[in-house]
Amino acid sequence: MTAALVPGSFDPPTNGHLDVIERCTGIFDEVIVAVIKNPSKDPLFDEAERIAMLTELCSEWDTVRIGSFGGLLVDYAKQTGADVIVKGLRAMTDFDYEFQMSQMNRHLSGIVTLFVATKPEYGYLSSSLVKEVSRLGGAVDALVPASVAAAMKERYA
Ligand code: PNS
Image 1 (cartoon, rainbow, N blue to C red):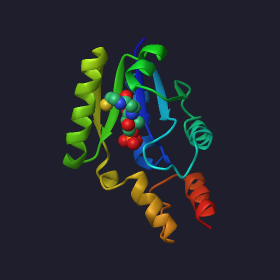
Image 2: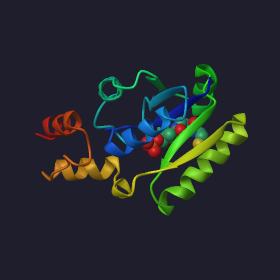
Image 3: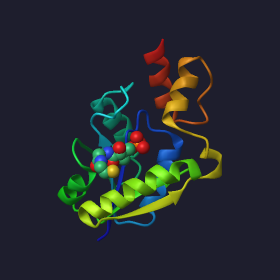
Image 4: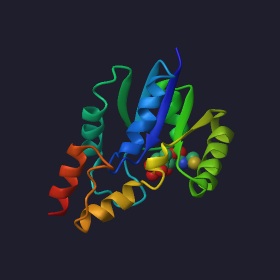
């Protein structure tokens, strides 16, 4: 039984996140999506809202469960029994920071990080950009699920 931990801010979840999670369901017996409780940036959606969104969006996959964590990711990995951390990689700009984090997590606990290359059409997609576009009245329907687009529209209204 191999379990993958997919951590993130998920503020909000995008189609890029769901693509990575879906790919993990085809590889791992269990997928634990881990929402960081207090992201460094002031979140648009609080922890409960981000968990609720992901719970609804991942309901079609019965091997996926949603959790949240507040301290070190490696401690949460130990607590949940996750075998590997999985992160999505969009472009070389992601690589430097992601590589540093993977090395630090390996140093702290020995856990391995696997990188999943995102779909090319989501290569430019980030939660921050999606929020900016939505805040300024642009269309985000092709970038996030309909429920997320509606939640952002309501929040920025
Ligand atoms: O979606 P994000 O913002 O790219 O996710 C970043 C996240 C939550 C995965 C990262 O900030 C994280 O793992 N934070 C936990 C704190 C931690 O363990 N830091 C030390 C290891 S680098």
